[in-house]
Length: 306
Ligand code: PMP
Image 1 (cartoon, helix red, strand yellow):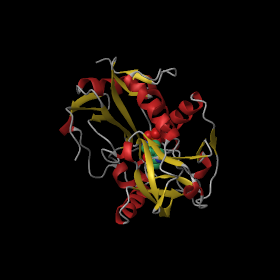
Image 2 (image 1 turned 90 degrees about the horizontal axis):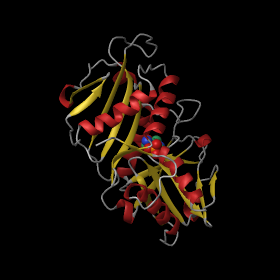
Image 3 (image 1 turned 180 degrees about the vertical axis):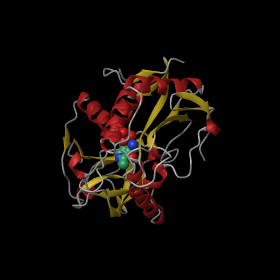
């Protein structure tokens, strides 16, 4: 269950959590027309920070414009409203969910006059894939469901409707007794999980599928690429066949929720020899941003002002 906070920012106002409701015939509920972001606030020695607040807001605008979802606020207003939502809820750390969606008032996918609604919620949330997943890793399987094809629903825009694919992958994974499923692109190449990007290590190189393999342009993915290069690790974004999974030395997921979650086993086959030197170095660099052991050279930490 969601751990409720006190307030939600809705259409420019902070309102009580329980009053942040919507009509059952809201366009986004009928057709999935909700552009959204999931971001995280971390507690640091300098107070609470939103990780890459600006990058999330930028991607939100990218997602919304393609589907004709209007946003009545500027990027700066949303960045500040996000800080305020964390701050006024008294949260030290949080998961933040920002929705720009078509509201109630008009039926049909073609609706041109449905209202543009906007909410920001922040609430406490722990480890997405289980308490010890970050340390021990998770077991996964390739899904029989392919990811969205770019010519049908673009995977780079983050819309609620896309997550029907994630749900199918998640349900199948649960039935198979694994934590997550890896989706292949419609061409059968490695793509991503239902809610996280995929990386593998082979011969000391860090490899990850490119945008053309139907992936979300993950902000954690981009951050890990930057951190890896900073550590002198070679990074290759390239299309990869499924068989790369079984010969990888290390493998992990990245995402706002998943953070950096190692993969222990795929389709019943152990990943590499169980060593995780590059994964561990990247985990250290990433989590170090929040305990001050990694210098924030890129201005990624946005203070909420608590
Ligand atoms: N892929 C999908 C399908 C996702 O839902 C997410 C989570 N937003 C990611 C990748 C990771 O993206 P990010 O690092 O921006 O959270």
